[in-house]
Length: 227
Image 1 (cartoon, rainbow, N blue to C red):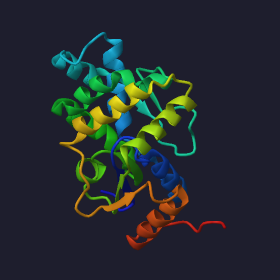
Image 2: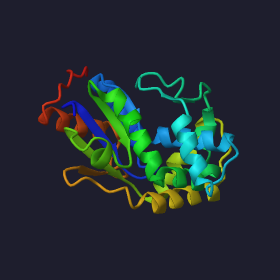
Image 3: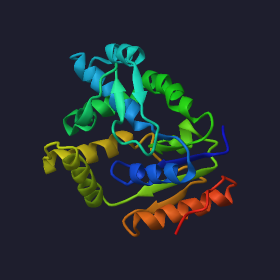
Image 4: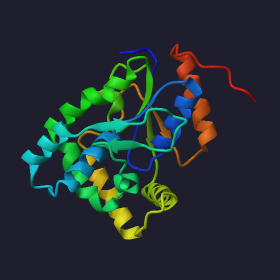
C-alpha cells in the first residue's frame, strides 16, 4: 500500500465525507468514498427491478455494472455514474436503505468492489467508508474513526438531502440510520491503530488540523497551509 493513504471510517452521518474531502484537498490526493460503490450497485439493482431477496441476481448486476466515482476532491458537480448515468439524489434515497444493507453484506459483492475501491489509490488517497482502515486499506499510514450521536448524524443527513433538493421524512431518515448501524455492525469497527474522534465535540477546522498533524507525524507530505 502507498504510504500516502489516509482512511476515515465511521457510521452514517458521522462526518466522514466532510473531513475526508477537506483532507484530500489539503494533501492534494484523490478522494475515495468507498460507500458510493455500494450505493451505485443498489441503484443498479433498483433499476433492474430486483428486491433484497434476489441475491443471485444482485451479484450479477454488481459484476456487470459500470461504476464511475469522482475522486477529485475539489469537484462536487457529480459523485458517481452508474452505467453512464448520474443518479443524482437517487444515490442517497433513504427508501433504499434496507436494500443497500443487503447489497453491502453480500461477500461476493464486497470482493468484487474491493479492487474497484483500491484502484484510484495507486499514488495515495484519502478514503472514507465503514471498513477502509480494516479491510480496504489495512496498511494505511493514518487511520481515523469518527463517531457522533444518532441525533446529530440524523440532522446532518437531513441537511445533506435537503441541500440536494430531496424530500426529507424524519422518521424514514432515522430508520435508515438505525438500520445502517445494525447492518454495518459486523464490518464496522475502528482499526486497532485508528485515532477515534468524536465529531460532536469540535468543529471541522479543528478536526482537519488534528488530522494533518497525524499525517505529518506519519511521514505524509503536508503542504504548508496559508493563514
